[in-house]
Image (tube, rainbow, N blue to C red):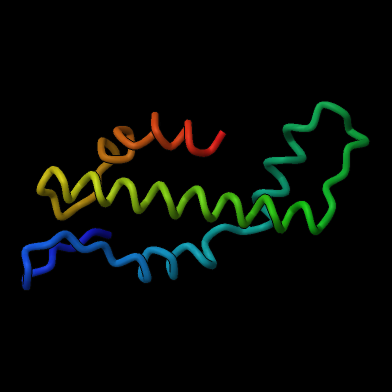
Length: 98
């Protein structure tokens, strides 16, 4: 996910590849099943517009998590993002996405 630039020794994150990988990986059907399973009232329905918005928010959350984790990996001098990098980003991410 993360790459170091050889030119200026500046940090560089390939955001285009991260975003492209996420575009088709979050399925509406999965989000719908997760949401329907969490409703307390069986009569609660989820409209298509609301489902589309929830999927977009999920994509934004996952994209932001990937970007922050890759930035954390670069700060630590790693060229590979591990779960530890994600875990270090979670506290601030939870504050930014209430």
